[in-house]
Image (tube, rainbow, N blue to C red; front, side):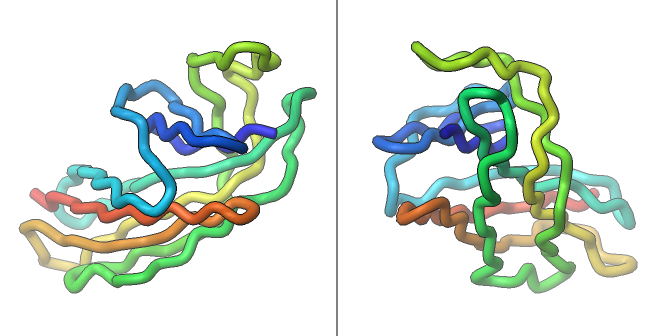
Length: 140
């Protein structure tokens, strides 16, 4: 089975987190990964999205995302999403590139009138592996 997270490559033993187009260094379970996003004032932005699939490019369960530290100047919500598999392919894997898999996304909405930097933290659990992320959204 494969697990993807958009815009970040995170590899570890067992299931893999897969990039949807952005390169980043490997990420080990238990370590902290930082994401940075930007959005105009009053406009929400996807922070990350996750999905899990099998060798036939079919959904194989949903990774669980949990907000562990709310942003002080907005809302970070977890919601269902269609996640498009990116362009990277792992050795021996089925090429699921450009397929849409039902998944989960984290979406940030700034409070009305807020401009500045808003930090937050969340965890993603898939089987028995949990990864922790901090995210910062620059609201301009």
